[in-house]
Amino acid sequence: MPTAPRARASRQVAARLAAATAAACTVLGVVAVTVAVVAGPGPGLTGYVSEAGIAGSGYAPLYLTGVFALAAALLLLAVALPDTLRPAAGLLAAGSLCTVLSGAVTCSEGCPLPPFERTTVADLVHGGASIAATACVVFAMAALAVAPRTPRRWRRLAAGAFVLALPLAGAVALAMLTVGRGALVGVLERIVLALAAGWVLVTATARASTRIDTRR
Image (cartoon, rainbow, N blue to C red; front, side, top):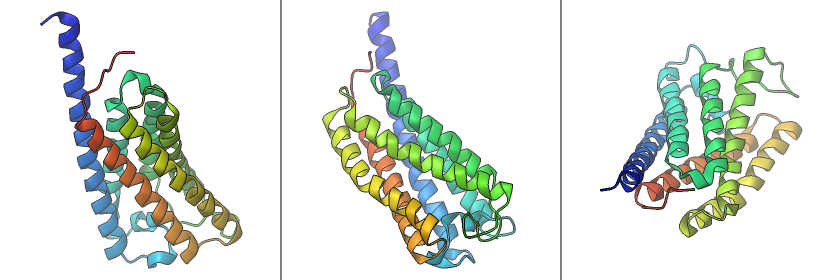
């Protein structure tokens, strides 16, 4: 086999393996975070997901394991995307870094955020990183949806997820500013995060099962 085709074949195998691992990390992350949130001592649907990871919580290690697994999933999916989809890959990589920061800097009890609650620097860093991570994933959907070289199946998945995620994310932001912490924000936050994780899982699975041309 000539050198160039052999190199392309190797990149295909590596990309599909990265995508498969991203899918596995997504499942692991979702399961770990869900168990920590449901079984932990938090306030249920009236609180933030991040409350499962506050210092002193018995489920914090499990929660952080899930968060870092999800960060790995975003980075691996970014690596798995072909060179023709670099904007989306860059957004996923940025989302991965923000997710790591969100896990590394935990919030205080209740994960307070302005304008209704008094916050610490750690609360602001954690909240900002979490919001940025979600935004990066949502805009990665848009980047895949509009890129001319995106495979049709991926484009449809990305477009559908973006159409759902954007207004929901906007509703979360508006509710946080006008209502504050409560059941409305808690439920909307969980829907947005579930949608983002589901899109990453489906896209990673599609990439792992698809052979495409990785050349520019």
